[in-house]
Amino acid sequence: MTRARVLITGASGGLAEIVAEVLQGKFELVGVDPRPMPEGREFPGKFYQIDYRQRKMADLFRTHEFEAMVHLGRVPAAARLRKTQRFNLNVLGTRSLLDLALKYKVKSCIVLSTFHVYGAHQHNHLYISEEDPLLASQTYSEIVDAVELDNVSVAFSLRNPKVRTVVLRPTNIIGKRIMNQISLYLRGNMCPTLLGYDPMWQFIDENDMANAILLALEGKKSGIYNVSGEGVIALSHAIRLSGGNPVPVPGFLSNAVITGMKFAGLNFPKHLVDFFKYPVVISDKNFRKDFGYEPKSSTADALRALRIEALPDIPGGRAAPAPTTDSTEAAEEEKLQRTTT
Amino acid sequence: MLGQIRQKLIEAYLSKEEKSRVERALKKLASTGFDPWGVSPSTLMASLASTVWFYRRYFRVATHGIQNVPPGRCLLIANHSGQVPIDAMMIATAVLLELEPPRLVRGMVERWAPSLPFIGTFFSRCGQITGDMHNAKSLLENDECLMVFPEGVGGSGKTIFDRYELQKFGTGFVRLAMETKTPIVPVAVIGCEEMLPSLSKLSPLAKLIGAPYIPVVPTVLPLPTKISIRFGEPIVFDANPDEPDVEVYRKVETVRTAIRTELDTGLKLRGERIFTGSGA
Image (cartoon, rainbow over all chains, first blue to last red; front, side, top):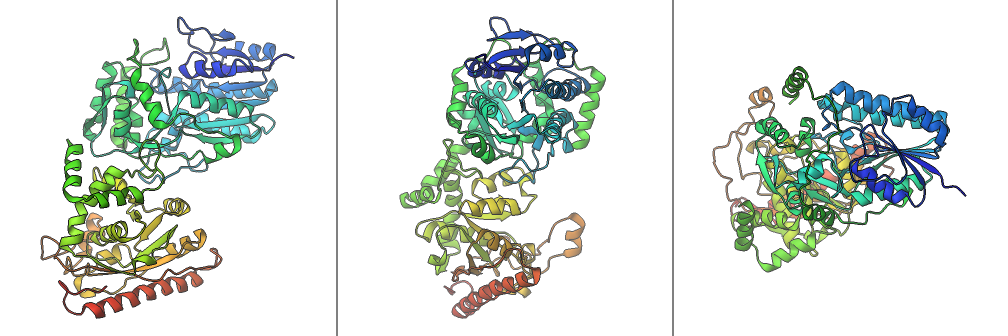
């Protein structure tokens, strides 16, 4: 019996590496990513370096007859892309992938969204569930691509019940192989925080996240699911557990500090600054119930695991060759920041 | 540095027994040592250390019927007064120090509180949650003890001339109690009403700057009145939580009357001696 084929997008990323390891025994894997595979790493299966919107993508679906698709390829805001480029890649890219999945009768699609779509808001209640509104783009328009990616996937799943679509909204994913901004931030020695604020954060270990994706792939249900780790922790304590020192910065200096961090190699998105102010604590009750998910590592252990790792050679897990943000747009964005804050 | 100050405060003001009470009051903690609402034993000990002197020496709090606070989920409904929420602090300290087994009382703070630097964080570290139906429900479903002042700012901002006059009650708490099948404990706080005697609320000016009230208080510090806290018998409403508002008003009135009765009993016991008389 041949094994079912699974398409993994964003295959060059850190999370995809772990997901591929988890899935390779059970499925035949095909990976795609607009970025090249990092040197010294091999994808356990076929790998193609293509943009999701290219026509070649359809041919891939035609020839491989995928059973399932795991869409991990959301370009983060930290990637030095223009807002419109990021929007096109994320929203239109996801849309065309889902359309292909429908056309070529892919049975299930797992889409990796993020808890950022809920937005950090002072009126946030505790335990945000999947039904709560997505407020993120209310304050910062930069995050609209993530919100729209989520919306596109949810709308797709409602319109096409034949394709089992699971949209996962995980909390901060951390781990030694993850190169997202939060992991890089926590690996640092000096971690800027906002003076006077110390919100509660959640984290999920990379292995737990990969396991959650496997559960979603093998499960029967479809829908939107929050995914979080074991505990909730105050940001300053999280920083200390991962071996850093919190450096409180007054709010009015936050933009300057983020710009400074950019020079130090950490391209931290400005629109996430509210997450350092207000808690966004999500509940993954439904995911636990419907898919039998249970995090294996505790939040404290997941944070401590970051400490052991030395700083990576190339900071900033940014998407490779991409034009830098042009100065006028940067200025525009900054203006927007000022008016919204 | 802050951590050291906190540690010194705890060492100076808390006995071993009090520390163990704090630990017993916190139920399930994650591997991180925090509960989901942001409370950890060390932060709670620090805030207890800062109130215990006021509780024992300054306001010499006396309690009556504290064992009426049932185990499991419950709603403490109290009269509100005193311009600043010292009454809330004293109720929480009483339940933490005198109830057996000790419990952490969760208060509900104004919705704008989280946006205040330092203060918002401090509130969340000592168990105070943003006042929100959603939060209240998830707390009660987690079998916590929730404290609500249905008078809101109408109660805390009232002038000395209106002391011990219960203001208009909000009705949300009764529906909340019915939906979650939570017993309501009426609580009467005596002594807080004279603590910061406000002569006027300056309502027009307060409205102008968006504050709920601006108290005109002739004293700088709260007066060392003796505070008595009376806990009444728990009231359970076993009815359809979807019943019309008219029925709910009647139940609110029942709770209000229960608080009124406790207040009257306490005031009678205390008499005119606001600095020495005990209403418990």
